[in-house]
Amino acid sequence: MRSVAVVGASLAGWRAAQELREQGFDGRLTLIGAEHRPPYDRPPLSKEFLSGHLDPAELALGDPEEEDDLDAEWRLGRTAVRLDPRTGTVTLDGGDQVRADGVVAATGASRSTITGAPTVPGSHLVYTLDDALALRESVGAGSRVVVVGGGLTGSEVASTCRSLGARVTLVEGQHVPLVHTLGIEIASLCLALHEDHGVRLRCGTRAARVLGTERVTGVELTDGRVVPADVVAVCVGAHPTTEWLRGSGVRTRQGVLTDAGCVTRLRNVVAVGDVAQYQSGNHAHTTRTGYWSHAMNQPTTAVRNLLAGSTIARCTAVPHFWSRQYGCSVQFAGEAMPKDKIEVVDGSTKARKFVATYRRGGRLVAVFAMNDPKRFAAYRRKLTANSVPGSGRTARTAPTAPG
Image (cartoon, helix red, strand yellow):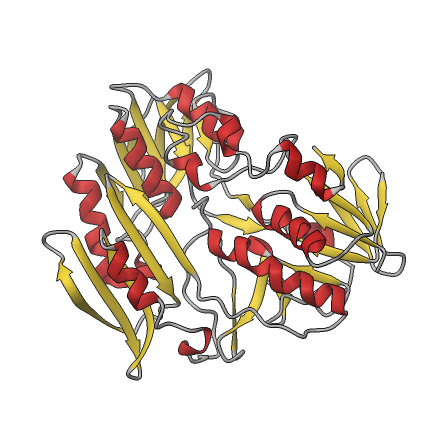
């Protein structure tokens, strides 16, 4: 293998490029990224960056020296539109082609939206650095902010906007945000954080469209109600960016399907990060997550298998995420299912410092903690990739989020 194209220049793509060099690949390396910016860290976008405590330069994943060490050909501001496995060619928008013996698919996910949001001034998606910068410039003390979507990103955006003095309304289609990820008992405690900090909640009804022409005026819900707004932040999830792989022979279904080593049915194509729908646990089910930890850790295994030409290593890291909302740290690890038994094993929910475990058939499968990182770390160490028995279905995971 003398040439590799890494398609996607966010964290997963950046780490894959680093791993290629660290694992001894000395051939031609091409890094293709849809954004014009070099790789940067996304988790702070909805927190420290949105609040104004970080500048764009502070989000960079690498410094100039590290970028030079990659000795890579950079194709920034370009998107892949086609992969031809017969010729090993990645075609870019505009018609340029990149020849490669191996391909790392790290194209991540594209933010979903609602009617009106892309065109009405004052409405923002929250996925890229430019998205977060535009939202940051729009939010001020007293402004009416409607956050559409109560997942991790939406919750963090709501928390940050409240810290800036905005009057915030959170719109969520589920009756309790994050219930599919955390279960009703724990999700209800996270919901209470919003209420206790003055965020108005509109749960159980989805947002239909953003209203306004020259400037946003509100958000119309599916039941006909209108929530007035000066600013709208749309955080309704994302879908994996797989369109460029159509017709390539790489299987896609809610992501790029891979084995437990991130290898697709084409042995010279691997997938990492948000876009990878990989075999998990005892391989009876597949999962895809937008967790920072997966984007950080999967490339080590994927690159090893790519260079070997077969699956000689498997991903065993337990999925986990960390969030900070209203001054509280929220941590979760594992894969939960609706019927798991949830038990608070340490601390107090009333004091908002506790650890809860999830058990299935008596086995520890997940752990949640609020404001107790030390105890969370202890329980997380007890989890292994095989602690989640396969169920023949896709595991419940958090919506794709910056962090």
